Length: 264
Image (cartoon, rainbow, N blue to C red; front, side):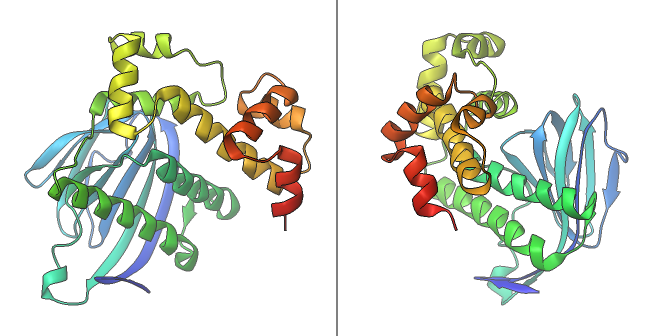
């Protein structure tokens, strides 16, 4: 069991699955807390008096003993973690959310999902190595708490349509990407997409995609021996020369020097 600022958490089980057309069980009740995070697709949920629709960028929390109803609206890929939470005092008992929390820092959320997927590949579909999963769960709880703080401060700028846009970008991150096509899928104009996305995420869609691609480039530079041309092909850049120019301009250092200085 690891501690957080207002209590302690213990992971019971962690599952990653999908894509699949539906949930195996349309409803369930557990004696643990449940948090479900969607990587792709969407679903409707009902927990106590909370109901709504969740997609990429949303975390859905269900407390112990509550009936969790859900119905997939399309093929869905998701993570679910079952965990115990022990508050440190009476004031902490209401700290965990119930229902949906929309996470704006989807880059960090995606990073956490990536590590959860790696655990699934290493240990199998059901991961119960709590010492490994707990830090990732704590990160999800931290992101949720930050969103609630923003809401209290009157800075809640979540935009469901822009969450769909971000989800599409993540699913097609390394493919040819047209903002005009994304805007068309959402039924809005390209300029409106740019304006609303910037309001929700603090950067334009093009900047958002470039930043996520460069994060993957940095990872591959440090963790593999692949050539720059090979990395460019994997990360959505035309070729190694173009990637080198973009990387140097955005990161402030050439890819070869980045690999040399920061590789361990």
